[in-house]
Length: 517
Image (cartoon, rainbow, N blue to C red; front, top):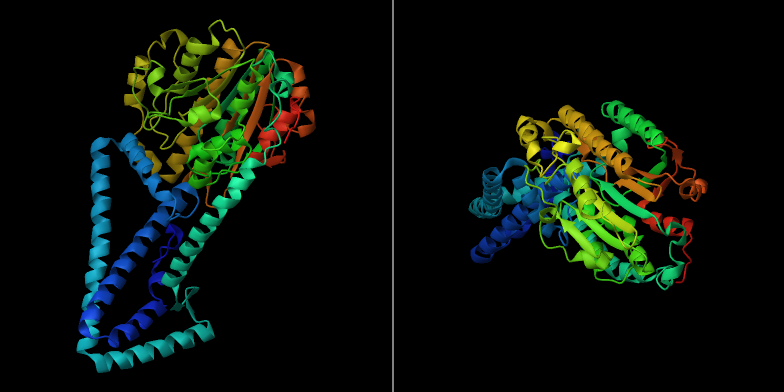
């Protein structure tokens, strides 16, 4: 069985597996009791490999990477929560029960099947021995001659190969943990005194905003880009009319299709956080993050606005946030939009009401996560008149009139179209807020956290995301003039591409921070 949906074709199942031939030899040589135990163990093992293959398919489809048997089990809880938010509790419970039943049937069914086959081998041992010898000869011949069916080798050792790959992945993961701990300690700004950190941003309100799933495909894919590019052009002009200027480029995210926290932590820590293990190691370290940089100066109030956080989030302390506003803290009484707990327009207005619009003793450094462009991209919010926002109840009718997630997520062209609309909504919500409430003291950095899933971005899409810096004060953009970024919100195709982990040090250096390793 293949481990990617693209390889799920009949020729994959017409191969001669070396593992079956070897198993036949072993089982034929055993007395009954050990034979039954061995056959049951082999069958259960084959069932487990099939489960891992299915998980591989799902991870490649949604996250653009293979399943890690050491790290990724805990992500299944997040997957279940996502299904609940997308199709409701009843559908989620039914899906979860179905998956559990399937897993049990695979493990038990293959165990019984191999036991039954071993009994047949023993009952017809003479014929089975000859057939095994013939099969082995055919396998060696096919391997030696490189014979194929539809481009797929007839002689197969696929199962052994799958096990070998996963074993190597586990070994690499364990090795990476030790290496990453050393890497995390090597911080050029770890000992920089507060008064030598970002001196060129003092007195400014600095806002870092992540737009969910805002990837390069949104501005370059022929289906999605016309609407998104038009929005970027219109909002660039609107910002210019309001006295703002912008520069934009590309960053390569450490994640793809999901696991947004890996992208957030990569940008803010200056380390490549591409696995859950690295993330856990990071948040238990003393690594200096961008919010912590501003907190350490003593001149800023540092806050987070994260409507996607619906449980306790102890990582806020690691990031240096003095106050974090989770979903329950924003006063929203309207409907959820699938996974997204509230529309971006409301999130930004709540930020204005709770922090940015209040008289502050210090400038603000804020981290804001906008979630309206999170898959399944249905239903999508619409902008409502500012004086009607209230507690968000105004969105009830919009949510009910929206599209069904099931009709969008699994329909490629429809998913692309709705994804593009969600990005237009999120970008417009953010720039409208900036035009309405931004001042000479406002500096906005916004970017995508990762590309959308492959059904939308494409099977061979890059991991690049757009990033932009927007400000009224020309000195702010002058500081990054040597970055060669594009004027405006839409980065040029050939604009510089950096790894997302490179941004922290480039940003800190551009705004006057002094390294003290």
